[in-house]
Amino acid sequence: MGSEPVVISLYIHVPFCIRKCRYCDFVSYTYDPEAARRYRVALLQEMALYHERLTQQERRLKTIFIGGGTPTCLPEEDLAAILEGCSRYFQWLSGVEVTVEANPGTVDLSKLKTLRYAGVNRLSLGVQTCSDHLLSLLGRLHDFTQAVEAVQLARRAGFDNLNLDLIFAIPGQTMADWQHCLDKILALQPEHISAYSLQIEEDTPLARAVAEGRVFPCDEETELAMYREVINSLAARGYEHYEISNFARPGYRCRHNLTYWHNEPYLGLGLAAHSCLGDERFYNTGSLEEYEALLLAGGLPVAGREHLSRTTMMAETVFLGLRLIEGLDLEKFAARFGKNIEEVFGKQIKKLSSLGLVEICSNHLRLTSRGLPLANAVFREFVLP
Image 1 (cartoon, helix red, strand yellow):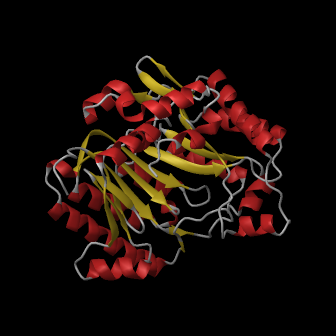
Image 2 (cartoon, rainbow, N blue to C red):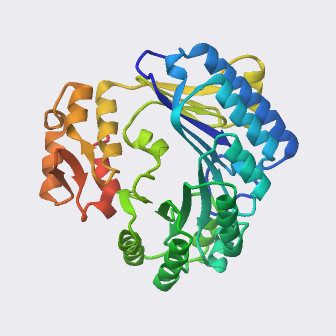
């Protein structure tokens, strides 16, 4: 696996949902107790194999993130077994951040207490919107009352680090809907809020509804106004806007996601999970049957590997770092790659600066307020042909 990563972040994918949402194109399966039991066995086998293949230093974890799918559609004993395996096969560093994604309607007090007891100290709840008719349009199983109940249960279970996921620019959503939703979310006082504009992905029920003219997507002007609204509303309430779509109270930034944005090493376990260790990126099969069969036979379920050139790693470090509001630390970039950024990307930076999309401030390359909503166009300038 190489000698470079000495402290890593671990991602564990749970590919089951009670029902797939209408906008989702992730690899997921309808929850079935027997399939989930077999998956747990396979996942623990994958952990055991990496325990053998990684060095003791490479098994040290600074963050753990269990995502999906809907991890909390699993029974609490399955979740406890996954977390127990995680602590058996890896070393949790002091102060490790352990996040589990959850959906309202799939948690109760007992399950949340089990997670908290097992070491989970950060809960990420998929609220998405506060309007029940928009939740229905998205195909979500819960209503907003259940979302509020889930927050209250999480507090009772001892969670003091709570993220709420939101989606805006939903077809039919008005600016008044969005402002009302932000007020309701702020009343719940979460430590962290993630707010993403809805992406209508190909081959999803929502995309088909749009193509058939049954649903009309949000226009770009309204989408931009909604983005500006969430930035301003949360800043006024003391949240730091630290990444394009993420806001945190001081001291509550998501350390796991910072691993990705700093382009640091991570290991992904489970179906279709991706990893990046040293100069190698690899990913697991997206077939549940193949995943289980390969592990049952004693092999890793890796479906593809890619060697990352130095140039690729530099480009990815730049555009991932630009996702952060403070931007890319140019001193760290030079220390990591032995080159100043202007030597490598001087032309791109000059072009983007002249357009008013990026700037260098306090030795960080960052997006300007004008560049923020045009981030993807900026990132493309650093993607190699």
